[in-house]
Every structure is written in structure tokens, then in C-alpha cells.
Length: 348
Ligand code: NCD
Ligand code: ZN
Image 1: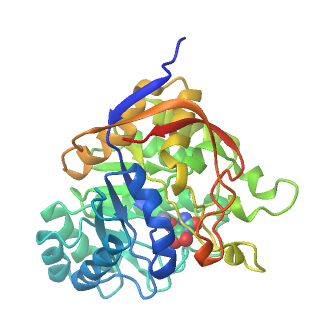
Image 2: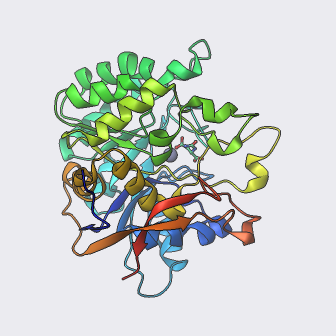
């Protein structure tokens, strides 16, 4: 099969990013804005973004660190807590302060201490969201210490997600950063109204990467990478003709000292060359014809937004991923640092 050396697609979006705040925001935001027209910005700051006012202020801080004329739109999300008020959330969605709401089960991941302790208690919030068409973005892992960390996503699908969809039919849900064959199969086959984001790293590494010759902080994120059969299932899902899978990098930068520490922070920083890495993956899968759908069309369709105007072009060319970015924050090591990938974005 011949594959093209240049690929032009509609401008893509990233439907799951952690842009952080302060000096880290200043160091990383440009990487996402270089490649993507819009991004769904995660609200797990300290303290989390739980009000429309906080989201508007955070959006202003994001735009303030980008160069003048940079064409990038942050789409803000509300961090759900046990105390979220359905009316305030709906008002924030109606006036455009929020594009979606994010559910972190309490203590599931980085900065989730204020997350939801019992999701059944949020039924009135979810009912309101279903009524107004506001998407619910889910970190889909149970937090029961008795459940093995490698099983937490699959158990979540069975014991939390499926019952939630029965309780609140019509709620639009994005299952974020899926890592398992079970989640991919559920999303592909379930009743409409569900979609999933898939990260570049979960398409590229299996759990061996975390233990490759010693503990590897760079390969540690949540949900953790799973065994090879799951990675293969994710690769089949994104290359399939389903429009329910779309691009969400879950780029989650932590300074080097927080990764290479006694207790390593969870998160893979894949922003600098995310689009190029995804292109490499789709090329490898022989599925470049599905790349535009994944990167630029399926996400907006699910969110009820228009695809972006304009295009980006990628060309086949060796591109070296730098060892570190963000000197001002002590350096953040990008995913695949030092490796050479096969694609690069042609600067407009
Ligand atoms: C994310 C972070 O660092 O904020 N970490 C991660 O491993 N993905 C949180 C998250 O998305 O779970
Ligand atoms: Zn995330």
C-alpha cells in the first residue's frame, strides 16, 4: 500500500488537556496552541475550577500567556464536586463559560481530592446536564483500594458507567483517556450518546513500559497503561469506522523533580509533538485515511460544534523530540524525548 508524504486535514482540536497555571501554563500552553485550534481544558487546578467566574478568569490567564494573534480557543470545564449546584452549572453552560463538566471520582488521580465521593448523589446535576445537552467528561476509574489498579477502568464501566446511563438516559458522556479493550468495546457498541478520547501514549505503550529496566516515571500516568492486548484493542478502535473515538492527548505536565521523585506524579507530557505522534501511529496502522475524522471531525460532531475552518498540513520528515522544555519550571520531559518520529507539521 502506498502512503502519502503529505497529509492535509481540517485544523484539529485536543479534547483533553491539562494546561496548569502560573509558570507551568506559561511554559506549556504554546505547544497545544501551535497544533490545535481548540482544546478542552481540564479544571483540576489547586483549588479546582468549580464556578463560571473561576473558569472565565482561568481562560483569561491562558489567553494572556499566548502570543498576540494566536488563533486558539480554550474550552473550559467545570470540576464537579459533591456540592455542585445544577442551576449554577446550567447557567455557566448557557452563557458559554463552560463547554462541559468533568467528573473525577474523589482520589482517582492528580488533584482529585475535591472530586465526587458518591456519584449517585449527583443525579440531579446529571439530569439537568442531559436536559440542556451539556457533555459529562468522565475519569472512568473506581477508587476502591480492593480493586486492582489494572482493573479499575473495566470495573468502572460495569459498575458505575452502565448504571449511570440507565439512571440518566440522554446524558452525553465522554469516557476520557480509555485504556482497555472493555472500554473500547463498550463505547463502540453502546447506545448512542457516548464517545471516548484516546491518548497517543496509550496507543503506543503497554504496561511493560512502566517497568522497562527499572521504574520509568515518564510512562506513569492514570489510568495506567494496560497489557498489550488492550493497546491493540485501542489501536483497532481508532482505526475502525466508528466516529465515537477522537483525539484527546491528556497531556499532563509535571516538572522533572515531581516525576523523578520518591513518589512520582502521574501524567505524561505529550503536548509538544502530539499531532505528529498521532500521525505516526495512524501511518503505522495503515489508517491515515481515518486520521482527519479522529483529529478534526468526530470530536466537534459529538460536542455539537462545527469543525474548524482552515487546514493543517503534515509532512513525512524526521523530527526529533527535545529532551526537555520549560526551563523556567525546571524542565518538563516530553513523551518520547530524544526519539525521532516520522512526521512534522508544516508551519503555515
Ligand atoms: C492528570 C494530571 O496530572 O492532572 N494525570 C494523569 O496521569 N493523566 C490527571 C488525569 O487526567 O488523570
Ligand atoms: Zn487528564
